[in-house]
Image 1 (cartoon, rainbow, N blue to C red):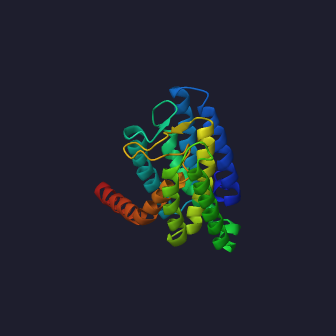
Image 2: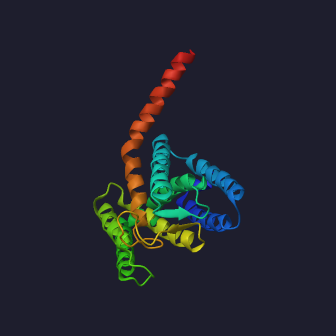
Image 3: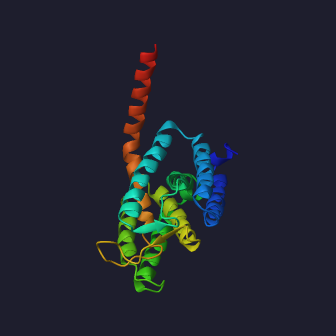
Length: 240
């Protein structure tokens, strides 16, 4: 099973099924149940990282750290959105690592490698259409915040360092946000606190935040890996 997670055609369907089941199961219990689900989520993330190169593992670490910090700020402190029990479930940080890997593995698929422009174009079209529909109010709210984030997301898709990866993240996050809000694992407030602009549930541009985490991973992972190796070397010399 661990070896299979290194193959995009195995990992992506598995992750969709795993996430669908996990978020639905979260709706069935309390904090203790969330702890059990979190242990499973972290085990899956660790298993998915076994086959990665050290630099890619460092990228996963950066995504988890940066994304968890953002979760604390925007959910716990600012209240832009809230989880079902009013906490930050411990499966969420692991989930951010898995979202990054979804985009990473998607960028390795035959379709993404053979037709990168088509894949990125589909992501831009899908994001743009969702942003326009959300802004129209047809989804129940006038999603101004989502439309603004969509504009940034499209810029990332056009000029970013890893557009196929970002496209994969958009596709997976679109599914994740729609399903997660449907089963009430989390809920987005009608307006952004302190700004007062309309917000969808989910907002159309939610994937833009995830792409920012990926950009941070691509930029910071080499330094993280170098620091790890330096620290490991220092400890090795001290032990000798």
